[in-house]
Length: 274
Ligand SMILES: *[C@@H]1O[C@H](CO)[C@@H](O)[C@H](O)[C@H]1NC(C)=O
Ligand SMILES: [Ca+2]
Ligand SMILES: [Ca+2]
Image 1 (spheres, rainbow, N blue to C red):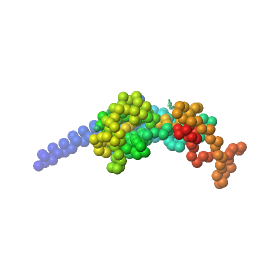
Image 2 (cartoon, rainbow, N blue to C red; image 1 turned 120 degrees about the vertical axis):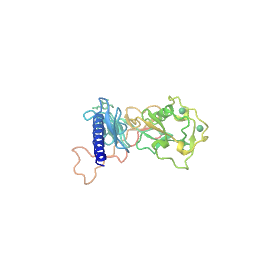
Image 3 (tube, rainbow, N blue to C red; image 1 turned 30 degrees about the vertical axis):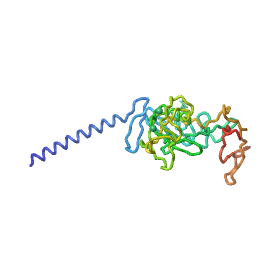
Image 4 (cartoon, rainbow, N blue to C red; image 1 turned 45 degrees about the vertical axis):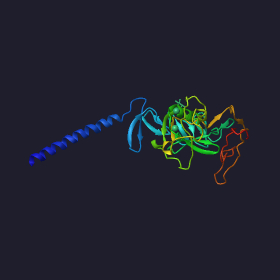
């Protein structure tokens, strides 16, 4: 019996040694090499070194880790305040997000027949397409990176990182939602998903657990301050900001009135009317 206990004791020591070695190895791995950054990932709360920190984060060179962009940057590069895209209702001017583009035009996203739903950020989700006034999903048969590339391009969300299915990570569509498209065969260069070869609208052999999804790289360049509006848009007169000073906000800077717009409008109209 004593002999057996000795052996158990030895086993414990061995396990301890192995455990300590493994933990040390883990520590070494947590130092990311140049060009990569440590990213905490959930739900497993593990860490890994990545070259791209993903939407909403940037790679911080001093700590070699991924850090959050400051609001209202939707994406940023190098530092938290160096915005590469802005969340609504702001527009990107240089590397800043502004409510008012000054004497430039504010250009919001073109009206799209596509949208992403059920993801954890603006750059991923189930793909939905508008047809005859009704939003519907897309089946993942023949769904690949070329198809995803067209979706990300059409939505101005950068390039495609992944062509996925709703079952990979995303909230599923309502069972009442129609499945509009199946067997998409994009070459990747089409400007709109509806231009890709596909089965007739509404024809499919799918269920909603096969809904197609994408993950795009970002940044979202659909909200910019621009010098001219570009093709297919009408340049509306740049809005004269309404001057407005809240009563109890204290004195405004000398010679200036506090300028506040409830909600900046796109000055490049895609509907033809301002
Ligand atoms: C700011 O972002 C741009 C990309 O938009 C990048 O080229 C530049 O290096 C960044 N600046 C800093 C200080 O990180
Ligand atoms: Ca099919
Ligand atoms: Ca395809």
